[in-house]
Image (cartoon, rainbow, N blue to C red; front, side, top):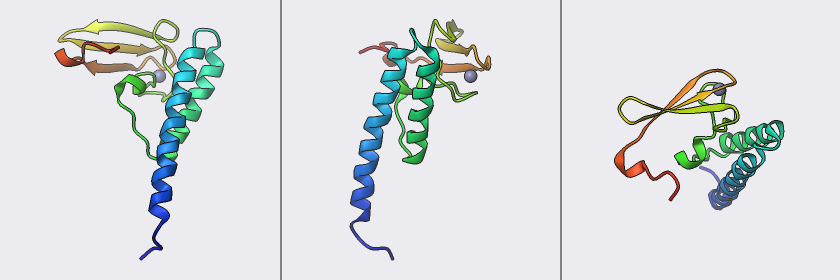
Length: 113
Ligand SMILES: [Zn+2]
């Protein structure tokens, strides 16, 4: 048995962490074209926050992380985006050459809504 009240605080902390993490990813994405090293640092910080507070984001934010090296991947800078067979989006990481695959369903083709 644990003392009550802590779970509420933890929930608040997670909410805050989710906001900070999302902001960090957005900052990293905005910084990437001008300063990739800084953007990578921001992205790794965001990842630390995500891991610590067990925060998950949907694909719109997760797609900026490489599944292979867990680093920031930015299309056109250190990642190559290609369409594969069967409506498959292939994002190749230039850092570790891991190919991140994403199956596109008809409803998810509108990436930017
Ligand atoms: Zn990678």
